[in-house]
Amino acid sequence: MRTIYDALRESHEIQRSLCRSLVRVKPESGKREAILEDLRIELAAHAASEERFLYAPILMDDMGLNPSRHALSEHHEIDECVEELMQAEYEGGSWLAKAKELYHLVHHHLKEEETKFFQTSGKILAETQKLKLATRYDKDYLRMKAKLAAE
Figure 1 (cartoon, rainbow, N blue to C red):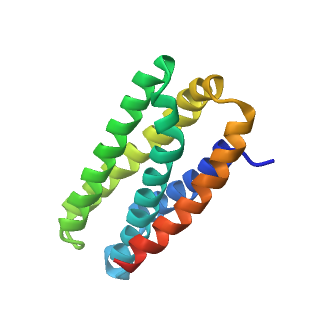
Figure 2 (figure 1 turned 30 degrees about the vertical axis):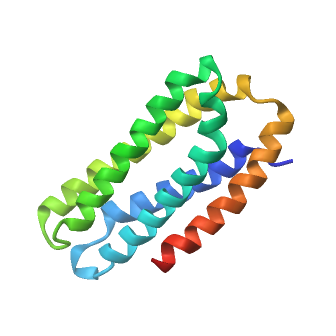
Figure 3 (figure 1 turned 90 degrees about the vertical axis):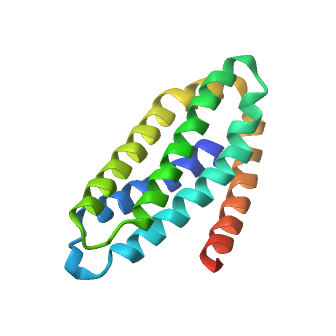
């Protein structure tokens, strides 16, 4: 059976791949904007659904309070970096520097989440919760991706 962690890791792999593409794409390819848009949607849909269906229940437990707060602050930091990158000139050198900053923020967050937060939350959640949360996360994640893509 698929748990919330399996669902989240699938999105994490998409995020890693899009981040790699973002920092490797050549300015003259004209693909920077499209890759950034795909990454923006992926990050936003993932974060919204993850916050609703993993962070929220973990926040209710004393052991999960500080790790959840930390993870939420990293989501905010990533959101701000995406916004700055979307405002930057796609052809400029500062764009690549900002893209690399986003790459590092995302990779740091995913590594920390997978090596620390998942372990802490795994002690808090019952096995049945992990399965139910995966279903709820998947449904919301797909809904959010469609909503964000339509905006």
